Image (cartoon, rainbow, N blue to C red):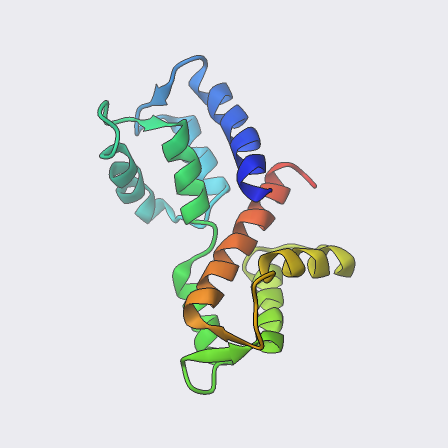
Length: 160
């Protein structure tokens, strides 16, 4: 249950950063550092994403739901995932499930900098690709990349 694990781990981290408050200002240094360390966001894009998230909150702050949403939505760079898909696809529309696994492996090792045992990688792929057919659309690929990124970043944060 990735969502539940994220809520527990990141919710606890938010509480530590917030020190009893229910929301954080956009310029909170610990918030900014944590998001930069545990997401694919660059320093250049951080302010934009914090502003977008804060704008959905009546206090114009980041609450725990916004905090977790930022981490979930920015687990991988979309440009990296799209570039990988295009390089794997003969027609730009779909790839084989085998190519998908190979591409996810490449993303996991080279973009998310993991060094997991093969059995762990296989288990994560089985979970991430549980609804996969023989061919994978670009939309499915993007979803798999994001979910895999979430799992990898959460595992790193939890030191698993």
